[in-house]
Image 1 (tube, rainbow, N blue to C red):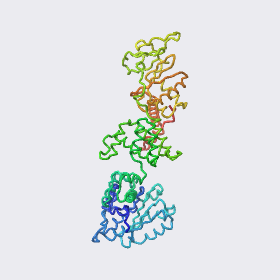
Image 2: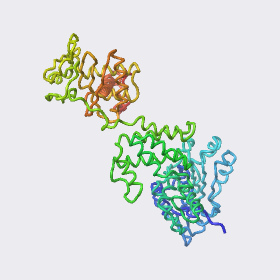
Image 3: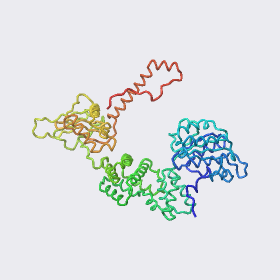
Image 4: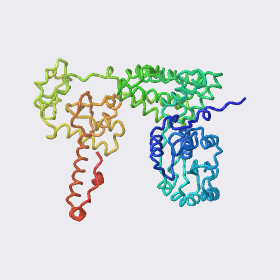
Length: 577
């Protein structure tokens, strides 16, 4: 004895049992109740979200006669009258389904339209459903345009497609369009649980989540996978069996990789990949699971109470979220997404996975606990605040600036006389002698240097970002080297590797030994903020020029409703910082 597959057995027969498309149901139900019927409807959406199902329910609503045969157009078809039963069974003579994927020529469409001149045989309306309508040829579309625009009162067109971009605009303009959304995973899990409970099939919640994720928004795919899981598990839907059936990666593998990345443990990352290889699990699946886990971690970090407490996966996400700062979680998420696209280009998928995971270590922000602290004698004081006398010894060839020079925004410390053979004694802050550097504020000097480096291509990517986001708080000159003290707000930019690369570029540009020291803190005057201010100034100037233009003024005076479209005024290209 054969059984009906779940996707057909539990196909919704009315709007009340349809799940996941409430916005479409509401619009159609209101139109049917108010008798405001259009002659053509277009349903778009990915496979398995209910396009054909809604078309059949709409056809029953238009032709339902009620249990006693006296009913009319309704948003709640009875399901027991001859019209409802025949449409469900696929034998209603006035309801025609045409698959445009296999009947795409002008001859098939012409044959269909030739029957449109005849009134319904048994129903109230003739309903033509053309599925995958985007597959029709250009001649077929042209043949149906006139009938589609002005069909007889008894004829309704329902078009369905997974690719509305391929449908001509002339057809789109003649239809009411409804976009069916992919099903949410929670919706799929809930519906599958109801179906399997009705079927008296035991199902573990974790297994249903795996099926819902694999279905990717398609309820039909989810029901087909559930059928497969029932057969695979001998009548039970268990998480371990479903994971094995789908070849899915256990969340513990993804969690192990993220833990190793957070701990900067390269050996653990390699061991995690070896574990996946030994189990024969997909490297692409591992990255997909990591992306899902990182997304939940980001949600925990942004909205701590957003994840459900009854989901065991939520606890894993909360535990891992405490290991990483929010910006590094976002960085890892971006790397995982990029890795999913690159893994097909690798020599094999496991080596591609190794490179993605090692990239997490290579670009990991510096550990603040391991970062060298800023020497006290070189720490910048807040503007206008007195500096405390340093208790640490200063370098023999350097001196520290006075508070007065710090308030002036720039410092240049006189070096110890080169003629002295013995090291000079350490100088305290109050004893130092300072002068300005060419009379320019420190921020001006740093901005000019960064613009020169960027224009020459000496810095790029994250090194350029570090330079643009750094505020120069102090410059200390000595016979041995020039010291730039910078303040950077973003933690990921304060990585030692980025500082060393920027230091090398600065040394090369200045032609002398240079040291960069970076401290954490809020910034106010950086090359980036100056660049943004300059862009705003140029934009405002461009808008002012347009508004003051005599021709524009004349047009505005002549046409009272004329206006300058916001955002349409663009300044001429300026220099790149």
